[in-house]
Image 1: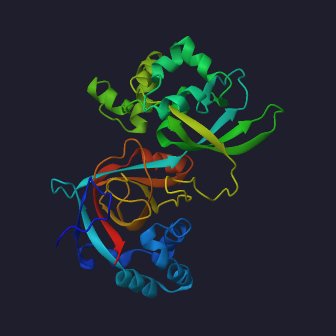
Image 2 (image 1 turned 60 degrees about the vertical axis):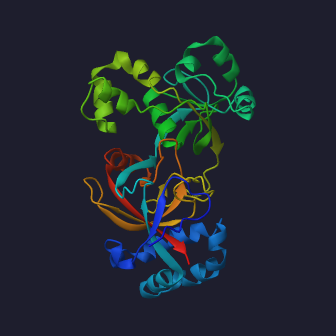
Image 3 (image 1 turned 90 degrees about the horizontal axis):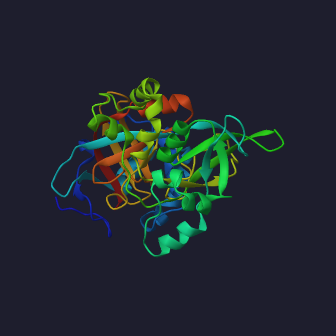
Length: 337
């Protein structure tokens, strides 16, 4: 059947499918999934606006009614690349929890920065800023960043994890020695290209395991080469501080709504618009997934048609699972009829 992608989609092809094509469609717990539909209705895309009253009403319905509503109101489409490829890549991300200090003090000397004024001015001109290595070494870059420190971390690898995940929680020791938990979220980048440190290690035959456990094992063996590894990725992330109002709530994604652990994904918005429901199917080896999720976020490494980053949640357990997730993926979007 013909492709029916919404306007503005340029990196994927949508091919109409039958509900029977979605692996284990009838087995997912819609009672759990309905939270992500309600989140979508906090900032609905145009195609969703008329559906949201029924989405809210059906939040207390049984799963049979919820499933029938989806099948009546949505058409499934198989996502494939412009070349017709139907299998892509699933990775995962999470919200780390990291110890930090509001001021530089012994043991805490790795800064997290807000976006400097010079960066804002350059972005208006469509230009890139200093690379990661230049930020660490050039006096003019250091001068531009002076006074923009949000917090100081104890470990450059913790900072790298935050740069890659794009958000995190800090258990931060304030100037008066009190401790609170805050959230830091992506604010801007230096607009340099992203290079995976795992890919750098593989290309140099430094490791055969580019998962986070593999990277950390390499670091333990090569403590004097950590800076070299970090500088292999020229992209640098700047953050903004956010109040943590609800400890159970995930960070806001690019759609502007809080992410739901196990039900939110990051996508390429030129393949799948924010707010789109997606049936995600992946056979492992980490999590085996056949479930309803929503496209509510994006990331610099998330490009292409059949590509998703699965939000695992907050903390070390979520991080361990995210670090092991790199597996084949198939996707179907559910688009309002």
